[in-house]
Image (cartoon, rainbow over all chains, first blue to last red; front, side, top):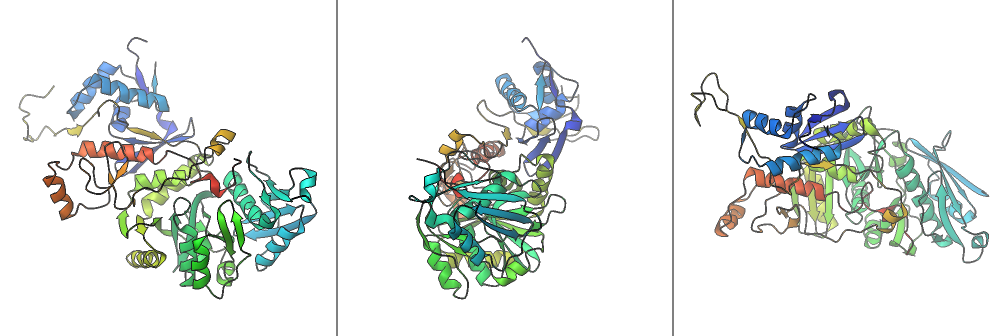
Length: 91
Length: 284
Length: 134
């Protein structure tokens, strides 16, 4: 689909625990547990529940972080990973 | 089922029904000092797959409340092993009250040491050897973690020793009671160690976990701290009911990995392992 | 999108230095999902694997793809939780391979974490539970 909007799973459905360089996330809607390493948590937090296109997400990340490698293909992969595990929805 | 045996081990009650007397007689002897359950939580059935299998080359198929398909039966001489495996199976597939970790557990000074890892890592052997040195044996197969309290509950079944470990442990514990030597099982030679009176007497006393070890047998002595994320993933691999417990299981495991230090220890022989364990415990 | 007056290395009172973030190369992973325990199918039971003994884990290094390699292997990282010994640094430097950047190390580590899941899941080996046929 052309330029989908990505949004984070609803906040009430997430139980988050910080473990060293990973965060552990229990997703109540699926009953599944995921461990996230950078940049996944940052991407989720930036997307929020409102939803952003990939381009808008890239811009926000670049503004908020010192991005050494703004590679569109890499960002697409990171988003695909999050969509595949159910923590981000694409619409 | 003609022959029946019931036993309570820690917080779990089992009822074992068998088409043959022999395994029941062995269970009665070895678990003689254990209490009986009020109401069993799980049933195990030892039965012949076909009626004639009860008498012709008798072979024991393991059944119960929970069964695994495609499980090969065991010869009747290994009926005791079948009963023990049946109890493991009920716990692995049916336990929902406690988070299960595939680990041995020993206690000292009111705190628990958990040792986890793949088959052959030495969990049962090390637990037996530490018991010989005054630690309380809480279990060699499953650690039961209560999600509500974070405490570890004892589940002291017969300790299953395999192959070379049999001699090591029979030498270290000359006063202990052992089951029969079961030769030529699919896992090699197996012999069961009966937990001592102290272990059985204290089996209803849960304690907080204080140290988690990942032992690795057959390597030069080496040690490293294991960070929480790695402990978390390794323990999900060592738990049969983590996913089934949902958020309770997640919270219980997260709390454990954040509060209990973890170390991987490689050891060339059991003396070295025991020394490493005692040293790490003293340094807590 | 930097504001006027924001220079590298300078921290004016109204600006904060942004935290570094790497998106990672394509092919890297940032999410490890816990697979459910004991998939109760005949197929998974039949594929029970007893792990091939790997190099002593505690001392091993972690290669970029997350596999364990002997300590001091060029391009590999010491396991997290094990401080780099003096000799390790010397070996790494003399091999012409400098210790990795934080991002590379973290990518290797994530791969390592993911690999911990390969093989049987849920129970460290089905052989502990029952005897598969054939």
